[in-house]
Image (tube, rainbow, N blue to C red; front, top):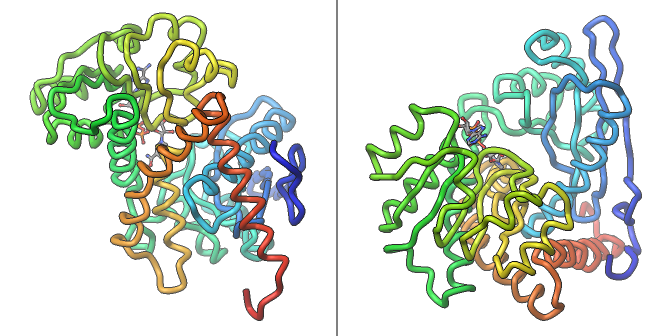
Length: 362
Ligand code: NAD
């Protein structure tokens, strides 16, 4: 961390607020963690997951909420970082009463925490949460939300890939470039569409054979096995499925110049960012390149309501934000992951500080 924060939360290792919610009748057991509100309300999704213990849930929510603060800061948003977890099996334990009880926990925080979808929660769930709180985003358009976030996530990832190519090759022209796309689900498929439309050659992998067959048919994509896709001799390897795909086993096998995709937590451990740097591979930090979804749900908080054009325009800045991270990495001689942290910490400290100057209603 570069210099201490002088205001509000976000001091390294220190969350501003952690709240436990408990409602035995509905079975709700939840934890909301607010890492920082230095830049604005702490926005982050609700993960509904069968954690083995409350301690595991706490460790996860503390880690995830900090990550959200860095993601929002790097995206240039006026949002802090928070996250929530509900302990339970969503297939068994999810009910209207539980979700609405959770909504009341969120409401009790008065807007300091704003929730959205995450693993195990869907727009329809958020609509129920939103019947108890004003601070729920990520619902369907008919419920007043902004709808499917994978559209802007894919668009931002596509623009991010172009920025990476500009950095390593001096041109962001995708014609004739070879991209290996791992995972062609909601984000990966739309990303493939963007890449193919600009003349990129595609190799794809997925555990769903129908999904890869569709890409072969529509884009002429070559299909490879999931455990081989990282090692394809391509310009770009784009992970859009699982986390942990950049590790001791895969990094030595990479043939690409760029790793850039939307999957969360691509680095198995933070040290793997340094391994990528040593291998001469440009890594687009996942939380910078995949910020399109956050930008979209964050836009729902605008006083005039969600505006798709404004959200899209903000997503169009992702390429430039990545180039700033790469410049910082080159100047400091650090990994792009470390550089992204520096960019986020600088903004949290420098812009967050301004809230110490009181203005009426601000
Ligand atoms: P999704 O479930 O629609 O797609 C994931 C795809 O990966 C599926 O087609 C699945 O079959 C495939 N897959 C699963 N295991 C695989 C494996 N071992 N090898 C290859 N493919 C495998 O999810 P999504 O919304 O497209 O999200 C993809 C990634 O992007 C996730 O890591 C997600 O956290 C991240 N992300 C998504 C958004 C968003 O707005 N949807 C935003 C930010 C980050």
